[in-house]
Amino acid sequence: MTIDLEQEARDKGIEYFLIAFVDLFGVMRAKLVPAAAINKMARDGAAFAGFATWLDMTPADSDLFAVPDPASLMQLPWKPSVGWLAADLYMDGEEVAHAPRNTLKRVLREAESQGYRLKHGVECEFFLISPEGETLADGTDTQVKPCYDVAALMRRYDVIKEICDGMISLGWGPYQNDHEDANGQFEMNWDYADALVTADRHAFFKYMSRTIAEKYGMRATFMPKPFAGLTGNGCHAHISVWSPDGVTNVFSDPDGELGVSKTGYHFLGGLMEHATSMCAITNPTVNSYKRINASTTTSGATWAPNTVTYGGNNRTHMIRIPDPGRIELRLADGAANPYLLPAAIMAAGLEGINEQRDPGERLDINAYTEAQQIEGARKLPLNLLDAIRELAANDAFSKALGHETVSAFVKLKQAEWNAYTSHHTDWERQNTLDC
Image 1 (cartoon, rainbow, N blue to C red):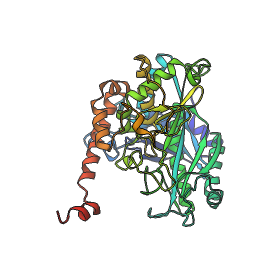
Image 2: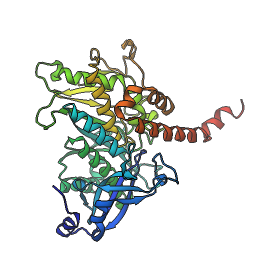
Image 3: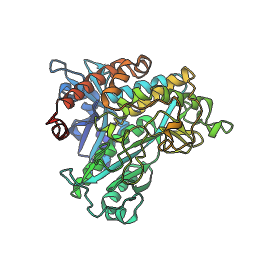
Image 4: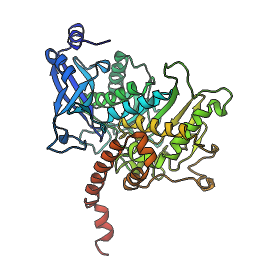
């Protein structure tokens, strides 16, 4: 069914639309379009200069056109006269192959052609900090184990409530909010859905949280490890795969180990096989590796994986199986691109199904304290450069995700790493000034 966005605007009181897309680095870009012009934009797209964003383009390239998806429409809960639309990117009449939303849609189409439909939910953790980013917004949030602290949660009631009310008004089905394991850290949960729907919501959630936090004189950050001694921001993904009609959960098997089918374990095997390559996407910043390779935090645990392992309902492993019919990937952090994250998950999992990859036996040990017992387990990359190299060398995963996407991502991330290594730090001066 074709949606007339001008009519939607009249019906819903929308005066302007944000036509938005997320680039390879996860930065949201947008143009503000008056409602009277939206149908033209829906037909032709809003024009951008692609090189001005984190996409693999040059100043000599043609205009980049962002064509909005009418099905993605969301009214800004804090400013209902504005509608937000996720857009797909085109250049010279062709889809931009490495654009994140296009990448996800392509991977999902391939999966559906083989009889699989990805559904997922994300646990978005974030800190509320001072506007300049140097301290926590709540100076009295100092408990050693602050997780679920009711007092710290309720001191931030107004901002958390407004974000949650926004999700309620948008029909996402939010069901719980809590103070997380680090001081100043929060998590908000909403219902899982089809992968593209969740990806659009994930992107919008980050934008909404930051905007509402600003209203209250705070800054919301999804940075993987903003404070050295505190638990970092994860973005755990809960994953299940269904029949194309969305009726049958193909991960579910009452007779399977922990209620997971052989197909589910092959999918899990694909995630295990390609984990070190996926890291570049699930953990895409220099700072990401401060989280997954962190020493013990003030609360007593990092809650982040170090090894490519899986277990049952056990949070010390990279993957856990919390319930029959679904798995949880605990690898990704708050910097993960909302579209590339599920694309990478589906690409790795589908390759695992097709190759019938065996994840091996699950481990029921505490991987944080008994890691020496995990014989042959691979370690996760120690830094972004190692992850980029793993991704660049993995032909099977690149083929599943899309060579254009991987090539563009590796190129831009390599440049980011080079920029990082050219930066002089206080640590270098403190440790090598007198060498």
